[in-house]
Image (cartoon, rainbow, N blue to C red; front, side):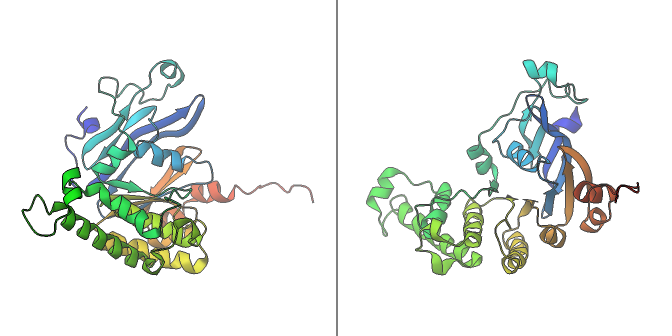
Length: 304
């Protein structure tokens, strides 16, 4: 039982999935997935379309409740479930009984964010009618703790408790400026977010995620919609923000050049099932991965 509750947690592990399964009725979207991501790693989750990558993301971040399994973040279980009701009869996975004696953990996405995770989405989710600047500033306010009276007085000079609003707002605005400059979109700060080019909207979403001061950043297809030049710049940007903010990064991506060039390790899903895990070089030479992506050659002569 100790290996499940992580009493002997490795302090170098940021995120651990333990036999995570997500079923929708009779369909297994993610089946018995286990992996560990080390602190400071750039870890990629890849697979053909429909492999279960985004479902795995959603199970980690509280969007979906897994059918079975556990997610641990920095040694603490944050998501846990076991088959109940009709699913108890439908799901017969070999690990189905391991979590029955433990309480279900089903945190909301906002609680996951407060723990130190932030994510972007496959389909961009910005405050589209707000400016670029306000999109990031709004996310920065997650760490503000002044009260309504302090925000009414807005004093610059006086007792510390009365000047709290002024100095926190000043710090949050400086942080917003820094993030927009890192992303290369400071000059567009007054534009309405929806009017940004698509590639810059992707960068804005990353900036907004960074505004919550995460320890783990989850990027869902960050290169989608980017041209080759933007994708090349994104590789450097992911490394830069990992190093600058001391982050661990988990990426879902179809762009194989980006994945192979930026990742430390890669986990491959195929039809919801684990297929392979290893370094980029190991994954590129794995025959099962090649078959999943390219298909198996027909050995027969076939018809002309």
